[in-house]
Structure formats: C-alpha cells, structure tokens
Image (cartoon, rainbow, N blue to C red):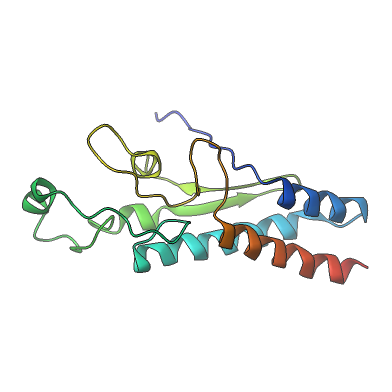
Length: 151
C-alpha cells in the first residue's frame, strides 16, 4: 500500500477570491471541480511544451537516461509510457480541490533529487508551494466568472 503524499499550494489571492464566493453563499463544489479541471488541462499542456509552471524549459535527459530509455517507450521527456500523465487527476469537494498524479514518482520530478534536476509540473516553487503566475491568474479568472454569476 502506498502512503499518500500531500502537497499544499499556497495562494493568498486565490484563497481571498474563494472566500469572497463563499460569503455570497455560493455552492463551492462546482468551483473547486472547475479549478481541478483547469489545473489538469494546464499540467497536461506542460507535457507538450516541456516547461514548468514558470515557463522554464525542463532539464533535458542526462546521457545515461537517454541511453537506458526503452525502445518501446514514447521517447519523450517525462513520458516513458504515458503512465504518469495518464494518472493525472483531481478530486473536488465543497472546501478543497486536490490535483495530482497516481504515480508516486511524480514527486521526484516536482521536487528533483540529488541525481535529477527538478521538472516542475504543479508548483512554481515547491519550497513555498506557490502556483505559477499564469496558473494563478487563470484560476482567479475562473473564480471571477463564478463570482459574476453569483451576484
């Protein structure tokens, strides 16, 4: 059995916008689900652009990785067989949304290791748990759309 790992993303502006919706009596589950869907789309796009939440290119493979890469794989960075991207998911309820991967090794890419450079997927800075500026703006825009419907 795998132990779940929780990573919390901190964005005061997103929290403020969500609290404003909550004060207006908005049902928060659809908002949280929409945020999860949007983040899944944005993270999935990173596999195409091979960039992190700040728009920086992912570090290329080391020569030893390229040499050991399976011939039957997809042949692209972070997409050996499509397992990690295929495990991207979200779960929303009335108070939160969780976006992540069903593969535990995604954590190594998010944070990097002593032998592998970081290839961020979810967070701009894993030490502070912050969103990338474009992710945050995108989520705030989505929340404002819900807020406009609520008033």
